[in-house]
Image 1 (cartoon, rainbow, N blue to C red):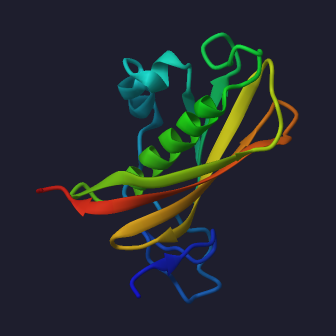
Image 2: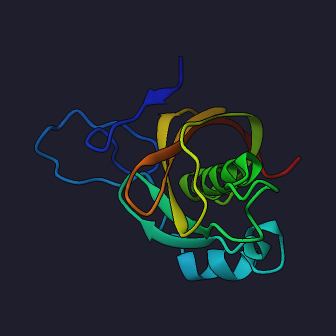
Length: 166
């Protein structure tokens, strides 16, 4: 099988495992993704309209935050589950794209989410990390936490990796 299981210490370059335990920190990203550009590209779509902001690109994760306000709450005043899923899928879509080269494209195939705690105000912070980076598919987990660091939602998303020409 071509899939590579991912941990923060086993990757070297875009989705390549290393067997050298002394190799030090590695990254999964293809090149150095530009979060300012990602935020600018998101301004005119659902991502920007909901106030999602990309904050951090670590060696093996991408983090963004989203406000809990009138744009993201449901009629009972709680963070809408769909908004949490939109945050998770946004993180995974950008992260998966950042992992592959410019000759590949990533499209969502499946997403699920467990909503664990209600949130009524403040911000939620989502962090996406890969579980598997394969040549044809990737699986990511996103954990969404409230301002106090409590887990609000956990999501798993699978994306297909396609050739750009087609």
